[in-house]
Length: 408
View: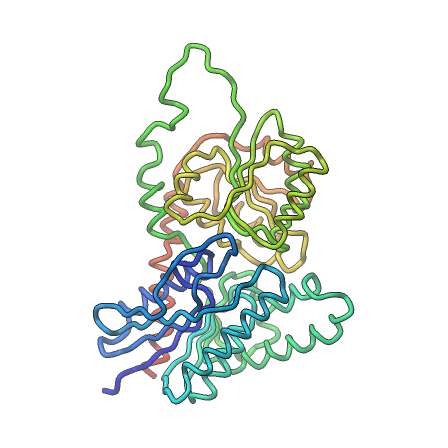
């Protein structure tokens, strides 16, 4: 039997941070378990670049002990979080991918993509190599464009990217959609395509840190017994990107000001709207918000343990009515109360699957205050949720779908 050769294109991969990085790593582990012993998987990704304020080192080429996996990290020019900077960074990645695959043969190309262009690159490489294509779509990029492109360029930009989307999806042998909410967008446009829905999930790291330990040890602020405990402000934590999609500058300054006697907010992350958020905080005189640089997941877990409530917010855009934020899976695994500014499909997902998660209309501080008042401020493990959305189980099923394409 010939040796199956697979190529995975992913813009982010550990030790870089972010949902795409964690998902790609879990998929690689699942593929190595599912693929034949003589299969080889090559990962073409980037050197860590998710946040300008987070710097870590990783080898340019990394191989596992069995020789079945090769990870190549391509260096990018320095960039920030703006769309133009990110476009330049991706252009550099695409050029290097083309050079790296020149003269190589693959049986299957896998592309995991949130901003469409990795999917387009995957379709291009698959065509060049006469390989089959598996797409993992994590966002609906074309629906985001009205909010990302300058108004004067939308008339050209939206049809152009919609055409690229049609071409990439039609090139694929199979397409995975990370949210069931995407079906209403993709199914009418691609009625003949084969879709699956392997969502994001809960990593083993969080199961070990929270699900099996919630309640096993006292909280740090509960170890000292006082006959008359002093009231304290609750600690509300947000961990993630601070960008246009999150819209934190549109909700947090007013919300924090309204809750300044009851809560303090800790933000761990970075992004293109951080400066706008800080400016708005200063304008309103909001003093109970602390913004910290991104940290590795081990240190982030320590911050989760310290938190009383976990905060999540998606901007007021129609495109976010379909997505399930990957952060929700991480948050839910902690057993902490969750305050989430989401609507439509993600709001229904919270109501159906996550107890003690209070949702509110995005960008509405008064609705957020009302939702906050409904939370029960205590930790309770969500074992049923974790069991249903274990990342290892979800990725094992996804790897099975991919392996079928190499068998046929």
